[in-house]
Amino acid sequence: MEQALLIENGVVVTMDDSRRVLKNGHVGIVNGHIVAIGEGRPAMDHGATRIDASGMVVMPGFIDTHAHAGHTLTKGLGSDSGQWMQTAGTIYARAVDTEFWAAEAALSALERIKCGTTTAALLFGGGPDIMRTEAPDAAQSHLTTIAEMGVRELLAVGPNRPTLTHAYRDFSGGAVRERIISPMEQLAVCANLIEAWRQRDSRIRLAVALPVFTGEELEDDAVVTLCLAARDLARSKGVPLVQDGHRNGSIAANAERLDLFDATSLLAHCIDLTEPDLAALKRSHAKVAHNPSALMSVYGRCPAPELRADGITVSLGTDAAAPDRPFDMFRNLFLAHRYHARHFQDDAVMTPLQLLEMATIEGARALSWQDEIGSLEVGKRADIVLVNMRQAHLWPAVDPIQRLARFANGADVDTTIVDGRILMRGRKLVHHDEGVILDRAARAFDRMMERLGDA
Image 1 (cartoon, helix red, strand yellow):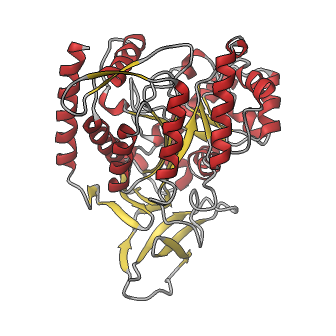
Image 2 (cartoon, one colour):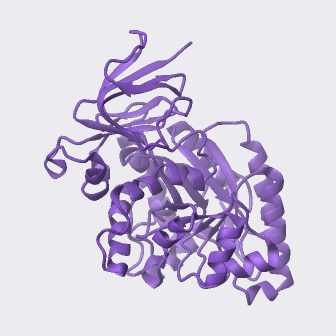
Image 3 (cartoon, one colour):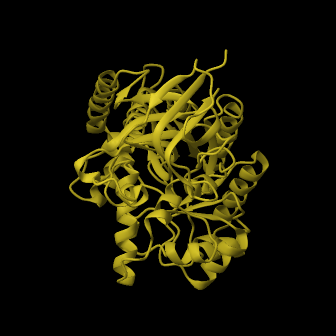
């Protein structure tokens, strides 16, 4: 049965090639696709469900290109980042079961829905060294819940470092068991997960995650073997290769030794890059996920404006949701501006439009999803958010792009739509009970903390 939706009377920020802003615009949607967009009265069947967007901006949903699964239930655990990292690492390896990953996924999706992030790219686990791919169960639990919540996601699954040994506690089957698995065995699990979800849900995609290795580490044959196997798996399956934590020569070292990157590769942080790093990025056409609120942006600088000027795709990520940052992409729009304006001592660096590009259409390009999402255009999937602009901190009603990038926050999102399906309207979830999600997450957190005490 045809499902039609009509959004009308809003300021439509298209993010199309012309970056059109329609002052009294409409967007028509049929079966999840945008079929009409323009100004004035729409010519659509009166049977469509209608949303009056008066006083609102209608825009593409945000695309967060770097975050972590698991982190929403580790907030506040540790007096500083070092303590938090140690605690989170223990939690992911020693204190969680499949229900933790399901409850955390629902909470993560809830936060994204409420702040207008319709797509996110997440690493599955606590960073590059404690990936939960010793078995498929945890990732299956996460992905099944994400599909139920209705958001769009790219989940990066991969191995741990071969130079470290991690023992996982397995809580399935009643008795607690210790489990040690090799990185190459983890890659086999990843291959099976990729195949299992290839045709299961069009909103879910997988990627191969790989730890970042320095030039010195690449002298280790086991490291090289793992990197080549991960690279070949990603290319054979036609999925992106994702890495978290590039800095100071690591891109060039991996490109030279391994030919690791191509146009589908997504490299997070990219701080303190060298000239060979920049050359490798341009040569390979790899994409960058810039995370201005992340700890790595404290330790060094991602040259996002310079990379963009060189034609390199730079997207925006939150690195959420812990130890000290939410999924709110509006916050990262502002942080990115101040981060680079302070560096150059020039307030004109990173304009509001450039920032919004990084969080929408450039984010889609970074995930190789630009043909379907990232802008409001006929034929694309209807991933749309409505932002309530009739508020004191967003008034008067001047330039909508500037107000979005400088003044708005996640709590201003009124409506979130993914694939033409309304997930939130008037800040209320349509298909799920927010209280139930919060209570489920609290139970999973309490159980995790009990196990942490025994870890």
